[in-house]
Amino acid sequence: MTMKTSLAEILTKAIEEATLIDKSEIGRPSADDGYALQADILKRRGVEEPAGYKLSLRDGGKLYGAPLLFVSSEQTFRFETGNKVEVELAFVLGEDLPPRAAAYTRDEVVAAIDRVAIGIELVRSRYVDGAGDALGLLLADFMSNIGYVIGPSLDRSVLAPGGDLGELRLTNGASVLFDGPATHADGDPLAAVLICANRGLPTHGGGHLKKGQVVTTGTLCGAPVIAEPSAFTVSLGGGEVTITLD
Image (cartoon, helix red, strand yellow):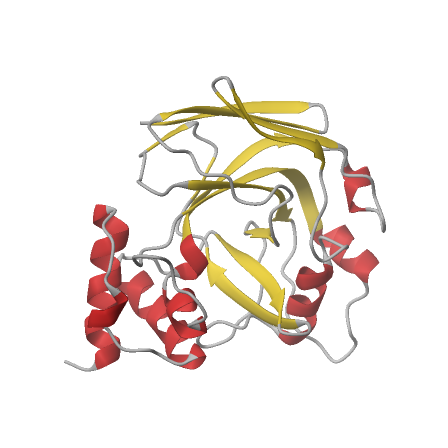
């Protein structure tokens, strides 16, 4: 077996069985290989079209991305050791966004969004001590994505340039994991979506964002750990949702 094939098998098992991989026992794929591994793992899991994507701007504005392993509005999920929570904005597309000769404007991307909602990304690295600075390993691991939960809808005013995202509160039982203004690292939560609309997906084989898909661009509260099976509650923009990990 090639390195890519065996790593795809190892990662598929770690995703399905919630296990960890010792990085000393595997190779270091390139970023391109990491994207190819994403596609291989999706195929092994029987996924023909991802339900959505996480996008990230890094390295001076370069776009990276990974398919979301699931998108759900359910409120109970499997607990996985090392589980972290990222509260985000979920953009549900009402139109396809294929790259075109005339660049999309931000207003056109906003118009293509059918719904904006509280998004909750469940994340954990499948590597012991995380991927570190190995970008290819991070991409191959779907940028640590476990899955994505769609919560209550938010007012579309959060899509306005410089829009106030409001106060965010994240609690886990008696523990307050975050309580303060919601802020996005890019300044504009739509910055990565606009770049993706104009350049296409950075994933293996390219492609573009499509109607019905969910897009998310990063956390508003860091990535607090949920240390044990339990429930946590997110409050943002007048909406609230409780998720149980058991």
